[in-house]
Length: 426
RNA sequence: GGAGGAGUGGCCGAGCGGUUUAAGGCGGCGGUCUCGAAAACCGUUUCCCGGUUUCGCCGGGACGCAGGUUCGAAUCCUGCCUCCUCCGCCA
Image (tube, chains in turn cyan, blue):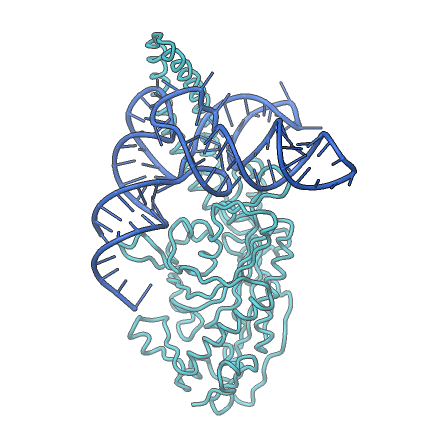
């Protein structure tokens, strides 16, 4: 959410941001119209309340002295009735203004490349090299099914499309990746490990920006379950840890990492990546979350992105880092780097991590503030997060990049200890 | 799921319809004293919104959350949330 005052006083900047994002500017006009009425109503209500408070105080004094207050009383009653009416109008305007404000996206940072869609994203750097094969490399789902470590068919029977069963070395590989990532981030990158709830309330979803705009992407529990929703990413519970808190200056920066299952409806992506591990309704992910001082924000984004990249480096997977353009960055983000890993069978780079700086957008929605030592007032923190990494996609990348002609797959050196084997064979 | 109790500033804790403009204490900060420190003493100490002539001042709001009663609510009423004690169930 943007600052109301900022939107009011910098309308031109908000319009520019909406245009850069290739979004309609109509939302802003709607908001401003309501906002002006809201401010007027607020002034009236506060003036009336002031009058009433004065009268009530006088009534108190008169009664204490045993004098008659009936004239003031009827006067006060009239004002009070007036206030009730104006307050209802005000409340309605506040609700409507907030509804609109929650639908206005974040303002992209200056350094974000301007463009309409993903074709205008900018490659920042590339690491490693494409593996060479003396045979035609197979898709990861064919490899996985061939080895008996991935079972899409039976998962369909149990739950439906876009689910998978990991079996034997496939299940173990998922677990080895989870441990490897969490250990790397906690032992070497300074993150504190979190195991959060994966069911959350609507306030949490609103805090990080999933609601109200993206309700269709979420799985919801049915009635009688308090309206809880399944998280689409650990970003939601982990960022909301500090919702409605005022942190101390020296609490910052805070680095959290969490492994959770993630649940996504994938509404509107029918026909996209229908096979394999790329797009599942349920997948595991290790998430990185940072709470930082505003002045450190973009430096912290570079560091967080590097933390995610380090996972791929140690696994020996070829990847590139892409700066998303204004038309492609997410609703809440001010700047986003996607990390894309090489999939030889598709001959394509595919997203395996998305690292975003939200500036104060989420912090304002969620009320996450901090207080500087010796300074009056509070400021919003900046929040960042990124996958470090999506585990299913990492597993898929390993299968494809390290496959052998006989259908076996070589295990990356860093996972051999946990796996207990250096090669998955049939 | 059932029965009872409780939620007040950074923390403890009083207040239970009108000088509460949230007492008092602890902690924090500033000062006096001191070579320096401790102690003692004095002062100060929440957040949000709006206005403004902006080192400040004025107004409104916030006592778990949301409503209601009243001229006036921390205080009375209703619903919800969280925590504690006991019973039931349970990995």
